[in-house]
Length: 305
Image 1: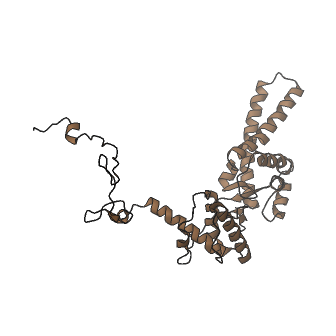
Image 2: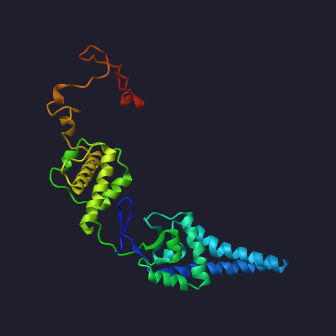
C-alpha cells in the first residue's frame, strides 16, 4: 500500500485511486452535469427565444461555464473533495499532505479539467494518470492534490503498544495538559505503525515527535531513553490518567487519600474536616450551618408532638 506521511509524521493508510475507479467517478459526474446542462439549455432557449444570435451565444457560454465548471468546483469545495461520482466510487480528493482541499485546489482542478477531460475527451487525463505513480492527472499535479480511495479493506486496528515495565511510572509528575490533541493523535498513530516503518525513518519520526512533546511539557526526556520508548511511556501515562478520571473510585481510595472515615469511624490521617458551625482547632469558627428542611415538612406532613 502506498501510504501518505503528513508533515506531522502521521502515516495515513490511504490508497491513491487508479484509472478505472477515477474513470467511473468522472463518467458519473459528467453524465449528471451534461444532463443538467441540456435541461437548463432547453429551458433557456424557450425563455430567450426573442434574443438575437449574439445574446444566445453569450448565454450558452455562461451556462457552460456555470454548470460544467462552476458547479463541480463548488461541490468539491463544499463537500470536502467528494462529488457524486466520487461518493459512488468511494473516492475523495485530498491535499498532498492528506488534509482537506480548499477552494483554490478545486478551482485549479476544475479549470485544468476542462482541457484535459472535456475538450480532449479524457485522453490527456488518462495518459497522465497512467504515467503518474499515484494515478494523478495534470489538474491534481498543478493543484497539489491527490484522489484517494476511502472504502478499502482494512485490517483490524492495532492498539498502542505498551512501554517496558516501569517506564510509565517515571512520568507521573509530568504536566501533560498543554499537549495538543493533534500531537497526541500523531504519536498514537506512529506507535501503532512503528513496526511497519523503516528503522531509520521510524527513529527520525520518533525523535521529532519526542521533541514536540518535550517542547509542550517543558521537561526534557530522561537521559539515555530512546525516543520511541519515551513516547510509549508518555502515552501510557496519559491513558492511565484518563482511566482514573473516568472510572469510579474503588472503596478505600478516598480513605487512603484522607477524604473519608475509615471502617472504625476514625478519619484517615487523624484529621477530621471542619464542619459548619463548629469551631476549628485554631479557634476560628466556620460559617454557620445552612438550615435544612426536614423531609416530612417538605411534603406537608407534620408528625404530632
